[in-house]
Length: 111
Image (cartoon, rainbow, N blue to C red):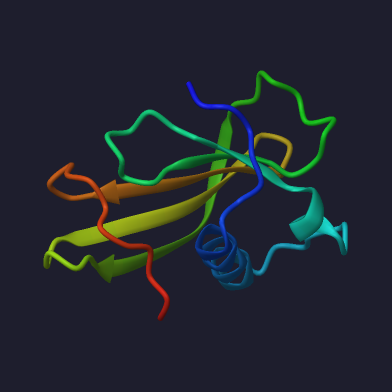
């Protein structure tokens, strides 16, 4: 599995939009500066584990879907992207699923 890293600008924009859509409180005003991501082994569909704080436990589990967006990838295939929270209500993952399980060509700019 890949290492934790700062999110790319396009990943950060997508995460901001998902958080905005979810209307969940982000307690730390500097969350964008402190969040780390880790690419998931999902066949290059773009899913990310989220680590909003350095003290977030390694072993967390899914709690609920906070928001979802759909878009059409450059090859015409639909993609569903979900923002998931853990059982403690912390940012947990961005789960991307392309309906034909192929690699995502681009992250959306217009959602």
